[in-house]
Image 1 (cartoon, rainbow, N blue to C red):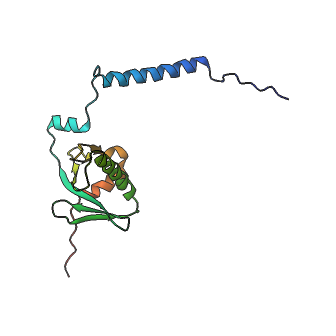
Image 2 (cartoon, rainbow, N blue to C red):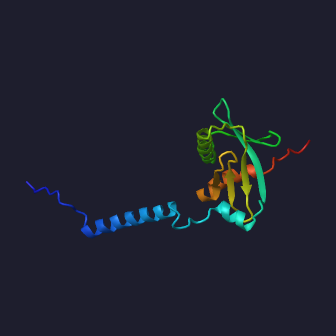
Image 3 (cartoon, rainbow, N blue to C red):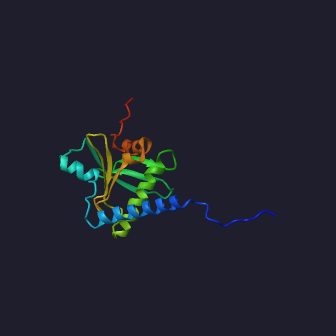
Length: 162
């Protein structure tokens, strides 16, 4: 019968290095939280400081439908922008909107107010909830997910008359 050992298989040096890394991370987070070190400015703050003016902007409402789809409408005139179900690209939109809706519920706010979708001169795309002040930088999630929202900025195409 072979001997079974319960000795620690991790070298002591690796444990000390891991503990030091965790401790340094906690100290950095605490120093930012306590104001000892300035946090890097957010993209929204950088744009405001630079006086950036949106390239395109659209106020959108998102409304759950009885059939499980989500109707996206232009807040100006309530015209339909998109109707999304389970097709490719819609999962990201639904996920982002679920998070923003949850935050609105925590602020005791409903779905009535529109969200601001903005394209910036540097190509960045952001979605802002004016009710909660939350801004989602959509480029952070990759080009395909960014494109799902970018399509919502496009004006509706008129069908040619016969």
